[in-house]
Image (tube, rainbow, N blue to C red; front, side, top):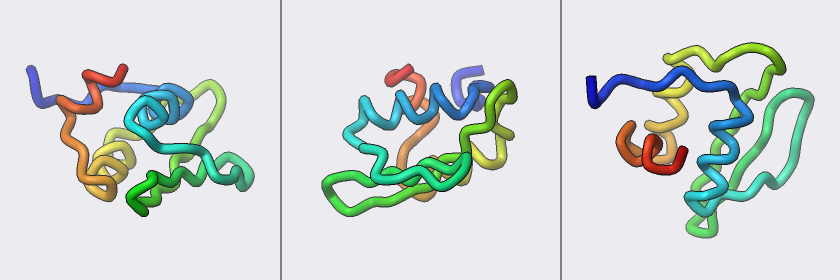
Length: 75
């Protein structure tokens, strides 16, 4: 299914967003605060040894205005 969300750990989501131009501005516990040059900001939870819940990933994509296909192309 082309539009289905991939199951990813938070570290992979952070790396994909970095490829999209986001940078980690700070880390608070297990939450990475990422900012884009255009002002978009999003918090990505990074929990060692576990994958990100699909609802959380879908919410992150909605906040930054990225499609599932765009995310897949950055992986």
